[in-house]
Image (cartoon, rainbow, N blue to C red; front, top):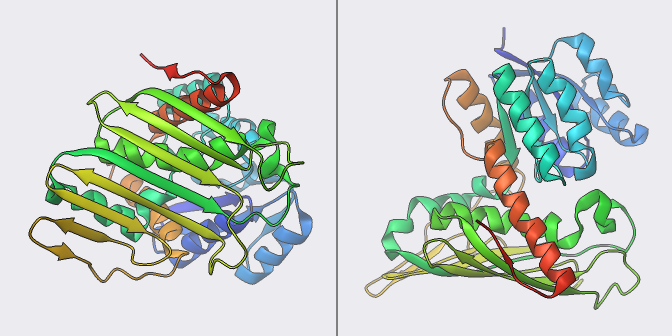
Length: 328
């Protein structure tokens, strides 16, 4: 018998990858999937030959030990809270919520019930970013970075454009890089400044592009560019990467070309790290399962999710007021 019974809520790209990861591993049994979109949940359920439903509350009678939540961000709190209160471990795709008080409540419930609460900052598990963090010492002390997250949105409609549902482009895309920079610099953000606008999707409710500037407690600083306007001719719907400058060199991560490049004064290192794009979601799920099985502390916990949320909400405030936001 497998150690954990797992349910997945949300059958978009990320939710589908969660479901495949549970079904294909030895640590968990996939007991079912759920999505409010009946056609989507049926399609994925039949593909995986697993139970499917449009009402995730049915899972309460199926005795899950783990739930993965990969739904639009505005639903995370209302879905996660009752599962945590029932003692179910939760893996919530970023952001943890769109509200700091709700995030605090989920963290408190998880601590009270003694269950795991992990936030799915999946880029920490991408082969390029993961190996860059492991090899960070090769470039000395990191002091400056630039990151980009570009997405080709098919149209200006849907929940990703609704600030109340997604947090807008600033939150939905920017939070990935804010989390990565916290991880790489091992330091907290003390100031954020952001500018944003609609340039391609002028009728969209959310900005289509934004730039941010972050200052860290160590004195390090970083810039972030995010956009939904990646050109159609670009060979992928996503272009994500980062350059990190240290006192002894530079690291470049580029998910569209070479995953990892390291340059110092004496050598260049380009490891062979090619992987299929879907695998890093599976790595995220397997990491969570292994931490639970072995009673280990895990990265991307609820507090990490809360801190990154506070910074990215500060970035949204800065974009609206045209003033910097200072923390702590």
